[in-house]
Length: 185
Image (cartoon, rainbow, N blue to C red):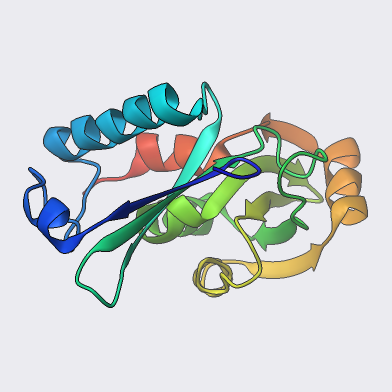
């Protein structure tokens, strides 16, 4: 454990004895969630690692020996607030509600795990979505949103301008909230 990160190394035999395969890991499966909770409870008892109510980014990486490395990273609850990660927000402008909903549902479905936070505003007759990506190695969510909206800028100053002068619709978790209510799949 170091700086809000925990690494769990599993040997090939340990991985083979898990109730859920790490190759096709899916947190929508109750058994997979129980397994992750078990890892976190054991980590807490052995190392004191306790993410509490924070968002947690989980990476599962196979290693050369046939085992796996599981990385748990605690993410700051308010992206860009000087916490663990300081990510420059990206701002997208949507022409209409249909594009907004389609873009948010698709992005949340495919890349929601790569978005720390998001906010939605109405500004100058457009819907403005401010997105805090996990990091800048993730361009896929930005490209996908770009199919539905125009990226109008990035950075804290621009995002603050939109937040100050726009009408707040959803202050935090906008992407997840819209996907939850409008995903038909």
